[in-house]
Amino acid sequence: MKPIQDVLIVGGGTAGWLTAAFLARHLGTSHGGIRITLVESSDIGIIGVGEGTFPSIRGTLAAIGISEARFLQACSATFKQGIRFDHWVRPPGVPGHDHYFHPFSLPSQRPGAPELLPYWLQGDAGPGVAFAEAVTLQKAVVDARHGPKRVGDADFMGPLNYAYHFDAGRFATLLAEQGQALGVRRVVATVDRVDLDEHGAIAAVHTQEKGPLTADLYIDCSGFRARLIGEAMGSPFKSVNDVLFVDRALAMQVPYERPDTPIASCTIATAQENGWTWDIGLQERRGIGHVYSSRHTDDDAAEQVLRRYIGPASEALSPRRLVLNVGYRETQWVKNCVAVGLSGGFLEPLESSGIGLIETAAYLISHLFPFDGDMAPVARHFNDFMRERYARIVDFIKLHYGLTQRRDTAFWRDNADPASFPDALRERLAMWRSRPPQRLDFITDLEMYLPASWQYVLYGMEFKTELGAARAGLRRGTEARQEFQAIAALGAHARRDLPPHRALIDQMMSKAGVKLAA
Image (cartoon, rainbow, N blue to C red; front, side, top):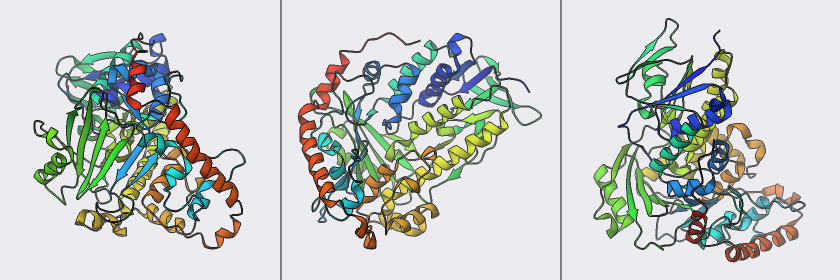
């Protein structure tokens, strides 16, 4: 069995270059370690749906040697502290809360203090106080459009948990620069065909400009086309369109009216008649798009929804149209080929899982790397892990739709039909009717979203948990009420202590201009 010496990544963009940089850093490519080559065409664009991330991206950027200031400067990046969901529970004009918030910070759990969720369920936070507002101060900060940290805080550190919004094209360029600084060889060429050997493994990737390229391990980052894992290796694609209905998107880039326009420090996801709109604030513009179901509406009607949301600023803009192939390959590593990014699967951008799944795959390949060339056991482990992670993300995204009280269109009625729920989600909801979710409901290493995220969405969507006899064990109500009051007071303090989001960005930009890390 031949040890692995050469890795060939087919495709650039975020998936290809993030994987290349992470592998190069971990495997010591610039110091004589595993050789990594990335081949990409010069005429392939960046999909760029969502432009949002999950907090894990901070650790990834640090791991590959990109400073926070450099990232902010290069990618027009801003801070993301969570997602605000407007009109997901009920349509506009219906009495009740018109939005809820999914913060990235965990519920307060000071040493010695009781777990707050059961006490919130029995009303100790006060009437009408949303769960996320009761247990973390992050919503107060986001509502004030302030940032999650101060300019003097260390890179990737701050009082509140956070991720980023960014320009996807610029991010890919930054990753390409860093990957090459870490020793990755870049080849600009278009893949023409893939040869298999007598055992069904990849023998060579042929390009129009550079001829055949060979390696010991091939990583498919070729996007939805899946040139290696799909076309060559024949790994089937599992659609989840019977669970998650949206399969189209329209996107526009909307400039700010003024250079000093305040920037929201969260994604704003607004439910529409047959899908939802995203609204993401970058430094010079907003990225706004509409994700919708082609079974419930048509492209022209969807475009009118997007233009109505944006207003007059949309009149001079033309939307980018995207067809979304929602699902994943249950087998993402076949022989000497492994898929990362869209070639392995795509789940709609509601909770920014796309880049998180790229990070997961790159981390697994790096840390499970089969140096001796024995790929079969590693492939089985990788496939089991990624299959379970995708399935759990599908459940989590469906939670946002399935608990809606909206019945104003067929789209929402179909989403609320329990027949469209995965079995695992139905079982969890059945348990949570008499007790709240807790960590034993989850296998941590297989989950992208922590139990707190499930709690924020579950109760943001106004799910009912009847504590019943469990109330007898809740004997620390006085302490819980004191904690809720302390969190509210800290929220007011944080609004004073943390700077406005745009001011924070402007201050941190002065720290930019550092050299490439090697």
